[in-house]
Length: 150
Image (cartoon, rainbow, N blue to C red):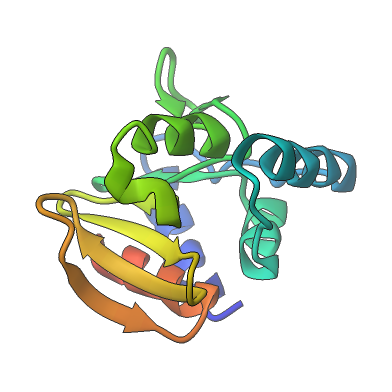
């Protein structure tokens, strides 16, 4: 995981406010999530995202939200939730533009996605959806997302 050191930075910062990173998904939760994504979205989850969820089930930090396996209460906060991956993608897919994407998360200005036709990881702006960058892997996408919000 290329982003491990960045998660440690975030964890040190949020500890000051009494928060911790989200606990990771169990193997059983991951297996159920993979099946649900296949059934609901007709897509296969990249191994990098599975590893991310196994380490921390979603992330909310400084305007960045990386979706959790399902809607999840933010550690240390009442009534604050990280969106669930399937629910968020179903919402995005109401816009035909997103039919060829899986969205892993969003920031202040961008979405962090995989473009399904060519399996490329992309940063696209939220409006109007222009490609900002194409990255070689999920890990590189998460590094970019976190670095954009540090």
